[in-house]
Length: 346
Image 1 (cartoon, rainbow, N blue to C red):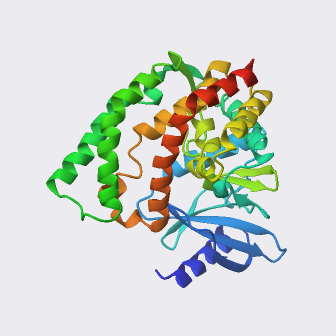
Image 2: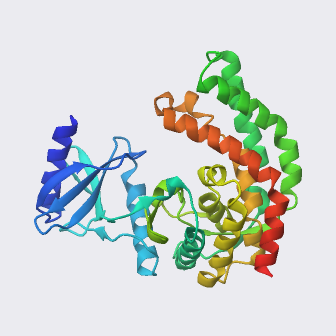
Image 3: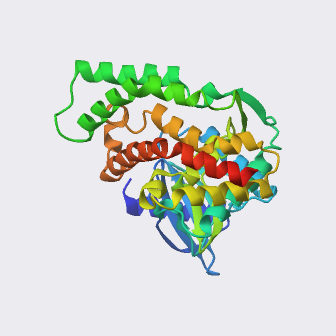
């Protein structure tokens, strides 16, 4: 279908299944796995509509929306989901499956990086989110071995698989695929050193139900405050320290503010326990080492030229370069960052 016909289908779904009479439906921010729309009704209220791409696991998306609703019910800043007239969180008609949530006005994503009082606001908001999700019925927090959080053996297998593919069919000598191949080889060679550095992590870290995709595009800011957390994944246990580090040490933040990320990290980690005092201090101290180790073990987006060539856009290429550079910065100043956190957590 064309973009215009999709807009018409979305308008029809809103009218028939959500009791929303839209006066305007326009294309919204670009999504990675959805086509997004913004609708305004006759009363001037705006709604954010996600249309899922063909092949999407809709049941998994329902579980993700339910997780966001549970977080909202426990006090986390999550936009309310609008249910259909029959109480469903996802409606399907005219070849489209969509979900609808309240529109968060006057907000911007955290893709521009954190600064000023936003560091502490994000740390406190993630603490609130984790405290809310720790009570999720899927299961309470529990300890997991640190090597499960930064899995060196898995990284080695995946990097070797990538390099084997490229050995059989080498990419063109220029471009992102060639850079990805060289970077994968360097990461594979560096894994023994990474493993040695990760030995300084605690034996166990705390795993719990988390957001699952708490990246900068999914954190909305309004001024110095957190306006909303959006786009949850379906419930799964992962390291709370990993998730906190993923958002406060986003590569774009680290690279954009080379002199600010360590004190900013300290403000974020210092604010977290006020909202979630249950997470052990050892987990919070591990945040920068886990963040650096995770980047070193990740094959994303190095794998995209092979797995999904259509996804290799200039934005993805820039993000891939940023992740690699940020890992280098984090390793270089890791001990300094940990010393600052020790003072904060005393």
